[in-house]
Length: 564
Image 1 (cartoon, one colour):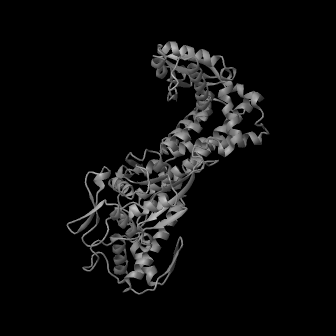
Image 2 (cartoon, rainbow, N blue to C red):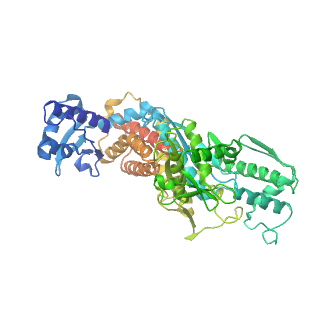
Image 3 (cartoon, helix red, strand yellow):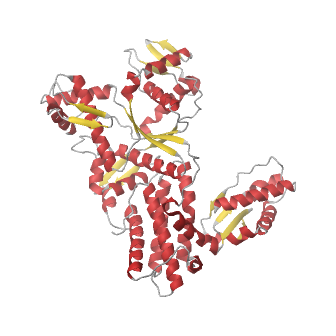
């Protein structure tokens, strides 16, 4: 409906220009917002306020002219029952009953595609998320990244983008060396208390599992890799390759249990094997953005807005961590991804400027500010009012699998996606497990289950309806029904806004609002009444609401149960 109003306002602006009341170069950014108080209508717009000065009129006078122009349009008048001037010149729009109830037909006709749009014009977008080091089980921070990244993927797909989900494995560097040494130590029967235990070794019980599998000569398959252990405890390279493959497989199993799958797994080690890191460095040198100092190679990142230049190659000959990131993102660009979104932990904030500076220094026409980033803050897990810090299997942190086993996949996904990524998150295990209205995922799923129960009862009683029964929708006139109708009409815009702003938590909030409106409607009205028109109208609205609840939950990767 916002688009409908906007189109007609554009016509009014064009007419005002034709009448020479507005200059030809006037290009207003018309803002149409949902009103907070239904006493002020359903929508409000600021056109009169924006156009008053160039038109040389008072905002209220211009608003009256705009209203008169809109009222002259028969199609507009059929959908907008009333317009009022509010405040200094806002125009409030009141939807007609027919326009309000038409959303029921739209939902039922579109089915699971209701709310979809083609904003993305079928363009390619790559979303990289999780991208954990294959050195241990996924922790709860990885879980938040998985939830947010997957929800973003679903939102962008719903708005017409061709999404590629990518996982970047940091399978090179000091942490992988520590992993191999830790597994080797366990294979030799050593523990963390041993004098020869690696200084930065991993101590979780999972290292014992890796060592046992290696000694048993097991074969593991991780994506496109098939690795068979040779059981030689002195072959550190073989241990390294097996341990990485073993933990990649474990992480992949955890993600599948979480309902997350990827299209592409990209290995950091492949950047070195293919010479892409060295080629990137040589290009930066050739472009004149590097210099030698103190035995190290530096990148002039200050030329691109950084607060100081950064070391690229250390005195020992090894590259700093942001250099392969630059090579990796150059590869993304060369693969044709003009839009890239990286979902990462907030601890990656410092690398953003360096990576973008490196990409600009390559001079390959990569736009400034590319790629986009969504950074999530830390998660604190609570049980019985106390913070949960340790996992026996991981040794030093709460794993994603711990939470899935505790509260289930649905609650874990919802809670991790339900707050803005930029906000710190407290995950209350007791709340997530509760079956009360205080638990938001239970509250939303229960709304869907209640409507499914209504549909079953109607079928048992032989009550049927058809999407063609549109004339009965005029019966939807209670305050509770009007509230539900208004929220259903907002769903398409809610998806667009959440996708545009890269904020999946907006869908979680929308679902809470819709569930609240639905429960109020359910509690205040009987559905299977004797009057056929009223009963049919309510069954149709119930079906539409159930559809939108299920679709919204699906965008969050959460199921919509028919019974609870």
